Amino acid sequence: MTVPPHVEVPRTCDSVTPECPVEGTIYGYTPSLEWNAFFAAFFGLCFVIQLGLGIRYKTWTYMIGVGLGCAAECAGYIGRLMMHNNPYNDIGFQIQIVLLIFAPAFLAAGIYLTLKHLVIQFGEEWSRLRPRLYTYVFIACDVSSLLLQSAGGALAATADDDARIRDMGTDIMIAGIIWQVVVLVIFGAIVAEYAIRTYRRKASLSPSALGLLADTKFRLFLGAVFVAYITIFVRCVYRIPELLGGWGGDLMRNEPEFIALEGWMIVLAVLAQTVFHPGYCFPPMSGRKGDWRDKLEFGFSTVIYLQV
Image (cartoon, rainbow, N blue to C red; front, side, top):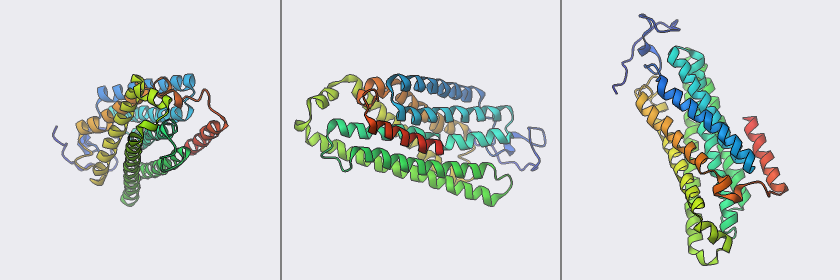
């Protein structure tokens, strides 16, 4: 698809007219009705499924992270549907730019939560950190990324014609996304290092750990976590040059790339996190037999997410 040409339009434009063509908007195109309706419906359905599975299996913290991510994605694409009806719709633009920017941070939290439980099951003694520290450290990093992205998105979306405020918001968003990529890289390195250390101590694994490794559902769960990790990582990397190109830049005005590298990457991540839910694929993550420390962790995670 050819990038729409840049067209200068009056600042008073609030709908598409001969004097205010769609090429004069930041995106330069009318967002697709079909794709955005599909994404909104998909994430809305996954939000409902995540709530149901979370309640059934008592995977509370996982439900909060992935559920909020699905809800934000759904609302973000509703914002793009509003822009389909009117590409100059400021409210629709503000909704989609803020929510779609930070929603994957919630989904990443669902990935971070798995490491603690993997370490508990396969061996705490050769882990670099105590299992619970993985949850606290990475969710804290995730929340800091979330705050940067949401604050930057809000500034940029509400800047109107103030270029200085818009650029400041964009820079904050970029910093948040870069920080999210850095955290993802660190997390991936820690997981890889722990997996190598576990493999070298395979003879020392407990019968329950060996049983997990032989369980097809658990292997599918690990594959799903890997798919979610890679797709979220690809999406975050895509967003960096998109925003660095500036508002109305060529990459930002290319809808097919947005659909593929933003929409479909997160669809694959959420699909993996929903179809291969830890409630039935990795029972140790279920809170059905949790002690008071699990309840404390659930409360901590609830507070930090609600504060955001």
